[in-house]
Length: 133
Image (cartoon, rainbow, N blue to C red; front, side, top):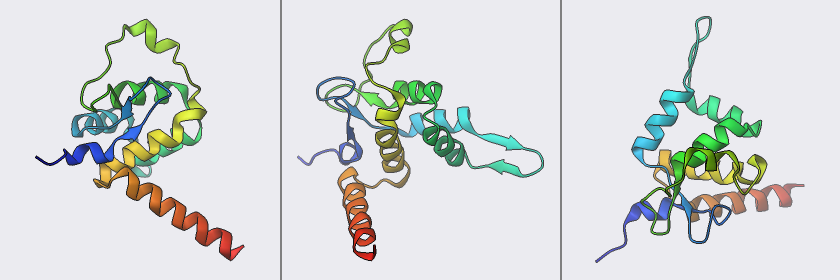
């Protein structure tokens, strides 16, 4: 039996709890797209991914909380943790501490690429930039 390929796109998320991951399902992506699509009559529709990128760069606490609610999965990578609404108002990390992981998890879900591949590409780009400097 082979491992489920969806789990290769899971980003370890110990900030939430031991063995938790960030993994966005298709339904999670649809929820993000529905919530964060921006319509500007002068410019037309702005891709929802641009709005998410803007909010991540701003360390937008509301967005981080909502994205974590959607993307965090319990050990095993498929079920969301069961939490009462008020428990989401005092997360054990700052927005800035998790924005890169959220960005990586969303990228993995959109592209279907494994998290290990995303990290490998980032390391290669950083190495090339260091050599060029």
